[in-house]
Image (tube, rainbow, N blue to C red; front, side, top):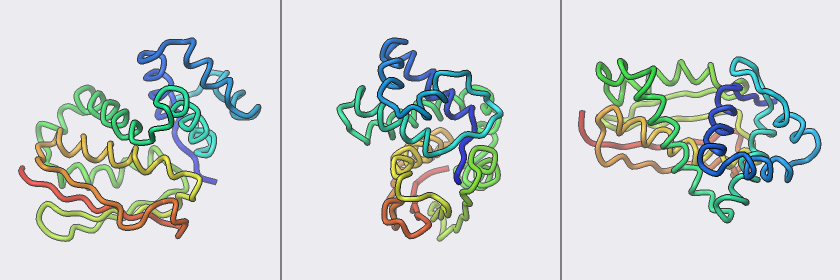
Length: 187
């Protein structure tokens, strides 16, 4: 079973409440199955581990109710969340680092946010990397736009320009892995 860190879930909950209010959040969780709804009705520990399947169900309900089912909205929302994090507590890394530094750093930090998903990086040349995630299953396809938003905004924050992302293998292809190619200019 793939698990996600509670801090990621709490970031999403707080973003929903800030963006749309407590009532919309309550509407989102009212659409969930009983087991998933119980998870979201109780406090979520930032340091705890939770089912990625449950988190995906929350994202599905959120996108359905607040974005008319437009999954691309997850990319935009992920960009906003990573921008906030990188300007806050990780700001010193941004001043000292480069896009390559961030990708290498995140390959280590990734383990602190996901259990059951491995990440391998291959630098294919200057300003180009392929990232392979092993462990996501087809029902986790909503992680796809979130991952793109995460890397796009993070690399821009680290000084990259013209960031281009493309999935070579999609999560929903259900091959046991997905591959994301990233290219950029600058820094």
